[in-house]
Each structure stands twice: as C-alpha cells, then as structure tokens.
Picture 1 (tube, rainbow, N blue to C red):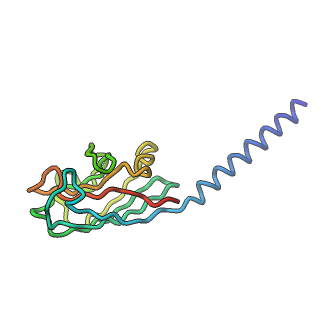
Picture 2 (tube, one colour):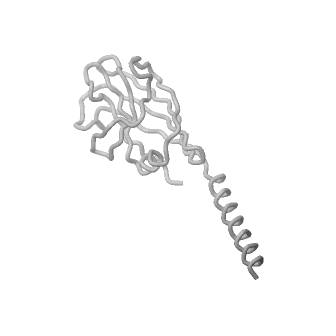
Length: 150
C-alpha cells in the first residue's frame, strides 16, 4: 500500500512539474513600443524632445532588451534609466539603460536580466523610461512602460 501511494505521489509530482515546465516554455517574448516625451514627465515639460523605445521582454528568461531612439532634446543627453513608478508618479532608478558616467547617444541599446520582483513590477506597468539631459537633470523625456497582455 505504501509503495502504491509513493508511486502515485511521484507520478502526480512529475505530471505537475511537466505541466509547469510546458507553461513556461510556451510563454512567448513580448515586443512593444513606448513613446517618450516631455509631456509624459512629472511634472510635464515643454520640450521638442521625443523618442520611441522598442522593448522586448522574455518571461522565460526575464531578460528585457531595449533600443531607445530620441531626438531634439534641449541639450545633450546625460543618462537614461528605467525608474520604478506608476503613471504620474516619480520613483527611484531601477536599471541604468546607459553606461554610468558616459553620456548616451541615440539609439540607446542594451539588455538586462530582471529579478523576480523586478519582473513583476515591469509587467504590472510600474516602470517608466527617463532620458535625462543637461538642461533637465531630473529627466527631459519620459514614457510609461505598459507591456501588452499575453
């Protein structure tokens, strides 16, 4: 009887593990665009600066890649980041999108592997992209990261 219960437990455990693995294997990368502008800054800025971020997020590996093209900033860009913060809220830097201390040039390209907590915030739309400039050190153009569902 105990051997039968143990075999049944092993079978159920193996089945559950393979279903979980298959679900993770079927998760497809999400690719989407984020518009960045001074109008999205908090508070909003009047600037000719605009841009678009092309993002891809792979839920199986938690890797996010980016290519951020921008133009017409009021002064040279100084840095760019992912920040934690819902729409309309400012928050702390989560990930540098550029090399710290090196002024970026357009397009800004890179990738990072997110922690489980970072991935949850990213997928919930609680991150934004901020490109900082000499004239606007707190950020000149901003875009809320809202991944598509599914």
